[in-house]
Amino acid sequence: MSEMAILGGTPVRTKSFLSPVVVDENEWNYVKQVLDSREFSRFMGSLSGDMAKTLVMPSQEAENLEGQYFSFLGGRMVRKFESDFAKKFDIPYAISVNSATSGLSTALGASGIGPGDEVITTCLSFNATALSILLFNSIPVFVDVSKENFCIVPEEIEKAITPKTKAILVVHLLGYAADMDLIMGIAKRHNLIVIEDCAQSPGTKYKGRNVGTIGDMGVFSFQETKNMMTGEGGMIVTSNPEFAKKARLIRNHGESVPDDTWDEGSLVNLVGMNFRMTELTAALGIAQLDKLDENNRVRSKNRSYLSEQLAGLPGLRTCSFKDEEVPHVFPMIYDGNETGVNRAKILAALRAEGIPVGSGYLRLMYENPIFLRKVAYGDKQCPWSCHLYGRSREYGRGDCLTAERLINDKFIWFYHINRPNTLEDMDDVAKSFKKVFSNLEKLKDAEIETRIGYKW
Ligand SMILES: Cc1ncc(COP(=O)(O)O)c(C=O)c1O
Image (cartoon, rainbow, N blue to C red; front, top):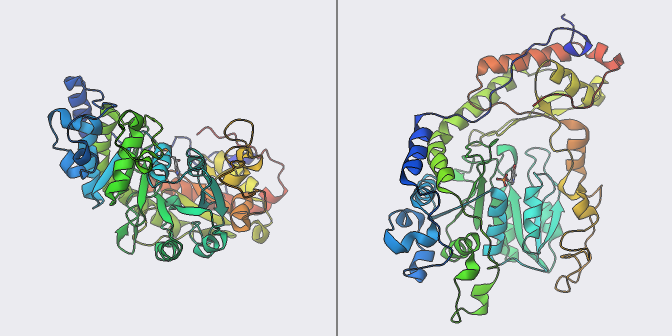
């Protein structure tokens, strides 16, 4: 049995895992077209042409707009990327934005959510999910997750509904699909909007349907760690022409469009944002969308291989995925009671072997002091103190026990199942886990530094 690297032995792996950014001729070609055209963004902040038609035009039609009519919907690459995305996800409207964070806020704003409204969401996600709710002054309400797929528990949503609830923001975390049948049933009974955060799940299906296309609106991310990536960027999808229209207005300085003929309802949430995507970003997006299926296939293959390799290690359970779900990372559940070794030591030992593993999110979203102390807009606790809200809402540790336990001492995530990492790379991961898990007795007694020292 070889000595663990953390105790002075030789690490299994010394080279880095590869980043998910895979560039080939396609990216170069589309980017070159943008450089040649000298058109870096053709968005105009004010509308020309037939406004009523342009704003509700399905993405595949908008791709072919010429002359003055396209200016409000962006340049050629932006409209092609949206059209390709809409086609791939089989939905009429795809509206690009500069991040999923701005996309989530836009989707909430487009569906009319505002001050005094509560939005129920999961407690376990990247903090952008919760913070996006604050933009239009709504109040996030956090509920617990399932032990099986780490997505929001539908029964907990139902318990959290109040007269102020207006929407459910579902996250399909790590590539798992949340239980959309139950969630849509609850939404229907209580007349709630459903927004799907698909930042980590492009290509995942729920009962044969793409996640993101089941609720009222879906939002995707193209940030550099995601399954398709343009550096930064996001896409909103919807089948609802009115939501599409509002989303297009919100992303593009909507406040410069309305005139005296607009009624008050139409003006809601048009507060002049610029969430537009550039032509260069869209050029990358077009090429990356073509790779999505292959990227997803590699993630699934690496995940199943690692699952087989790591079966039977003491105290460790690898998490299974359905065939129609695309894993974003490789999640595992660790039980330190079974082995007598705490998770921090396991993580440190694996990192010393050259394997970048993490403990999931460092905290739940409600543990952010912004929520614990309710400080967002100004220093008077807006939006929680807004007279339109009129309820008290506290956040505190202990609110969502399943999720707290998962991140406190159970989750182990390995990140690099992405292309171009191969089964050979997964072999190094498996070797390292086997080495560490066959040295548990030594690890139990060892005094080691468990703070993160790994260079990502
Ligand atoms: C679940 C989830 N939602 C939203 C976001 C925000 O995405 P973006 O970085 O594109 O704003 C992320 C990004 O990590 C995420 O993982």
